[in-house]
Image (tube, rainbow, N blue to C red; front, side):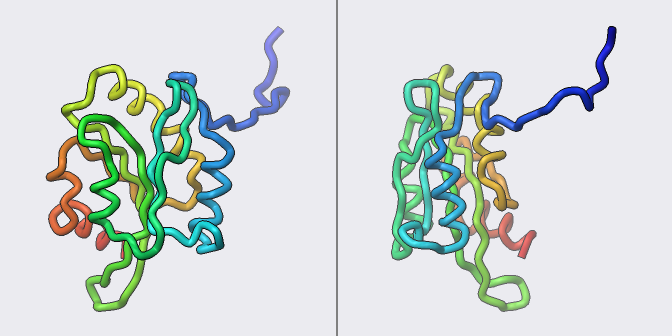
Length: 157
């Protein structure tokens, strides 16, 4: 006997084939962050995969922090994810801001973390509803604000 798909109830779980899950705190804090609600009136979050099982908040930057501070908070030789609210001027001169998701997967990282972070990225992205710009960076040139980040932002401004 075959069953129709409508016979099944599907629940979207923020888990990928790597088995990594997204901590509830990540989703709840992001939802307040994008609305600018306290205590998450912040500039950015940096996320790590803890114990190869769970995406958690590793660091957060208050509103006075800059994009350069965000980049400095990324480890040199290990992978991370981040979301940052960047204020900039659109092509027609309007001040605006966008929240972007950055997957930091440096070439200098070990193979296992690179595979774990690559395979788990979609679970986190699906938990961060409302992020329209997703970027991947494997070295510091791909994190350069003027040549990599700003052009990506202006495409959507």
